Image: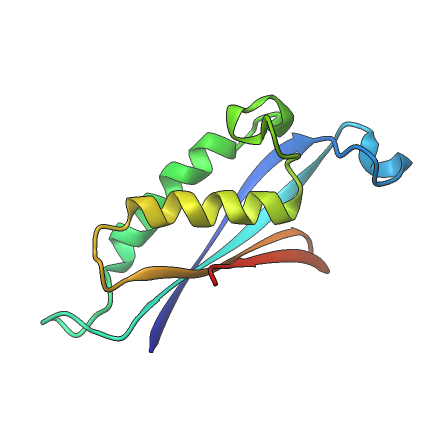
Length: 123
């Protein structure tokens, strides 16, 4: 299988309930997002999918999150905007944007700091 990775960033604030005093306070992160897509078949140009197209889709998703208070967004109404839930949201949104049936999102990692991240993988 071939796998491509795109790395991007967004900044946003959130609050997490029931995880300890520090996280319950309104706070923000500069998230680093790693998006991976994979597939077994390359096109006639010898690529899985054009990086420009992949980056464009990721940029659209980042625009829904960047410089927002995540708790107020509809997509996090029923689920708290933890790094885990953010990674899952990005993975699902990106999968909907990919139009090639042979290409799928393999995993998304949301880094909330240099040494703490959460990864969502489609099973």
